[in-house]
Amino acid sequence: MRLLRAGVDTSVIALWLGHEHIETTHVYLHADLELKERTLAKTTPANTAPGRYRPPDQLLAFLEAL
Image 1 (cartoon, rainbow, N blue to C red):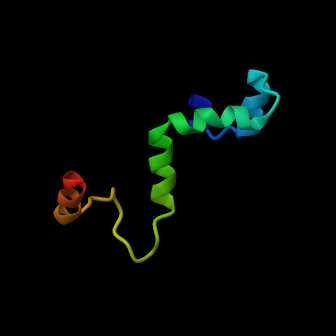
Image 2: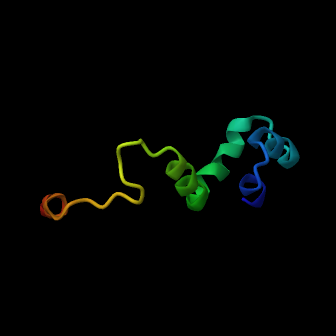
């Protein structure tokens, strides 16, 4: 995780870990929620407010009723 956060390319990490395929290394990308949140914050569309999505109470009530 530290290497990913430091900006080391995933293919380099895969080589260091001895992975034959880079897809094997992608498991580590799914484990780091902080990294995902930072990346998503950089891709926020221009016309939206930054931050986490907060569903409206009406949607939550609907989902709880299922």
